[in-house]
Amino acid sequence: MKPIQLISPVDGSVYAERTPLTLDAAKAAAARAKAAQKPWAARPLAERIALVKTAVANLNGNAPKIVEELAWQMGRPTRFGDEFGGVNARTDYMSDIAAATLAPQTIEDSDKFRRYIAREALGVVFIVAPWNYPYLTTINTLVPALIAGNTVVLKHASQTMLVGERLADAFHAAGIPADVFQNVVLDHATTEHLIANRAFNFVNFTGSVGGGQAIERAAAGTFTPLGLELGGKDPGYVRADANLDAAVDTLMDGAMFNAGQCCCGIERIYVHESLYDAFVEKAVAWVKTLKLGNPFDADSTLGPMANKRFAAVVRGQIAEAVAAGAKALIDPALFPADDGGAYLAPQVLVNVDHSMRVMMEESFGPVVGIMKVKDDAEALKLMNDSPYGLTASIWTEDYDTAAALGAQIETGTIFMNRADYLDPALCWTGCKDTGRGGSLSYLGFLSVTRPKSYHLKKV
Image (cartoon, rainbow, N blue to C red):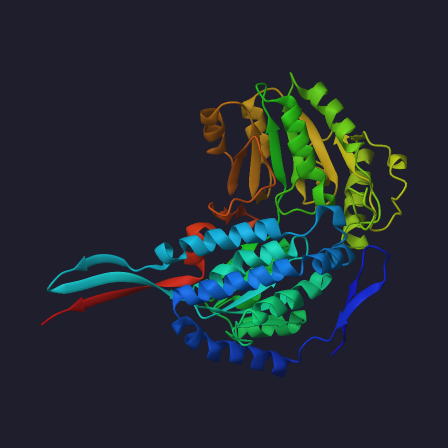
């Protein structure tokens, strides 16, 4: 098998290399996961929860090494630390609601009938995780899957392949059996073969639309349930009654943090005409405070994109937009670390419209287009003019207005006066080309379990 290489965006070096499993070895791993599932599900729920929480505590204990590895693997500046604030919050919340969510729902319990609906683990859960928030996105499914009694096979993105190893180390050290949680390195062909041959009872994939389509094709006819989070082009809308400074600070951070490589990052902004000029002026000033540089430098607030080919996509979108009439407000010379490769200067574009790729296709980089709108109706039309639907951010001072507008936006989550955030108590979901399914909240447990009805009669 040809080794899979992890090329670091920091300096272009080969940071790690792993040989993927052969098809026979991959089949054997899936078979071990299946054999281990029922004994794992037979353990008391409280025991499974305790083991998972111990595993996450182990992960926290390895934070310094993990921060360094994340910088090497995907370029995030070390000043921003690890992802464990969110990892811990999500683990704690899902642990806290597990007993109530997974408990049978009693319909009748009398001297004649006992009728109830139970939740039963699906079996083997296969997680195909992305590189941009490699711990958080894995935890979203890994924690509820294990707590609910499933076994898990994890295939991490090649760009962050060491994350899977760190997770496995932490979970196995906690006492979770090796066959209950397995980290594997697979190529695409082997992955698709396993899915097509029903090796798994649930597949969770986070990645591109093309990747999701490949997963769906592989699963066709197997009736294997899928959870797919496939991308976004998340909008922000700044109404006339918005707090301007708060909107600029949050929306621009949502557009630029992690070099724009956030599933729910802000990629397009619509501003009421009364605030437009002031918003653009402040947004440009905000971006100019960023420091693009080596992620190990303490003053770097913007690191390289995870791969130079990702940066090339963003450069192409910007160049096309400018050629079509857009105006770039950030001089790349202000960011001398821009090397034409993975290190990419941030950009703010105006005079943009929806004929441009930068306003319609996922950028997943440090660029945002800003458009002027005259009213809510125009903003709604533009926000819905997208193949994606993950989140939308509305800036207003009125709950009812935000809720009324949100009801008309085709998206999975509506934010008011915040953006680029995930609340573990709320379902993380999307629509249109963003995919299907949902994680976290009580619904996250429902996606990794199935209902089982009991109709018991006394004679």
